[in-house]
Image (tube, rainbow, N blue to C red; front, side):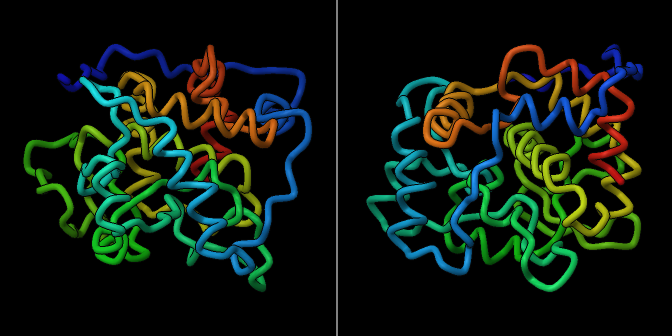
Length: 241
């Protein structure tokens, strides 16, 4: 799939009488679920809440398959080879406080990755934008220093998908998280533009629908009219603060 041209996207701010956070949480669902804590999840819980959901969302064929976000391996192969791992798009190490933060419990912020790729990514912040400079080219699944900090580089085809989960987590749990990296803040408009322009894939959309059915709670960026958020300066400030 060709990478979209991001230069003409409208990212002008909009205002609302209701707070952005209130409107965002209402768009996620009626009531935030009391997700089971990450520490208490068994391997069967993780498989049920993530890998089985990915398999259900998988539709083999062009653009329909659920693939892992780094190695881009089909979920069928991941399950057959038993190399699955739950990847927190916002690493658990970004937690503020005493270990009681609930963002890490929310499956909407997870994705299925291979064990080796999850380990390689470690806790490094993700490069979630299209390269704004020709000199800033980086090979997929490598580490690169940007703005003085090591970042992990996902394949360009997967960055919008990851960014939509990353922004969901940062907006839904903003008070629980350390700030984004300096580079993520610097290229905030590029992250938003890529997520806005790059089409939502069928498996990505179906995973969100499954979580909506399971919990009554899911990612508004994967529902109709996500421009309400992308075009809101207040929303972007919440995500990137």
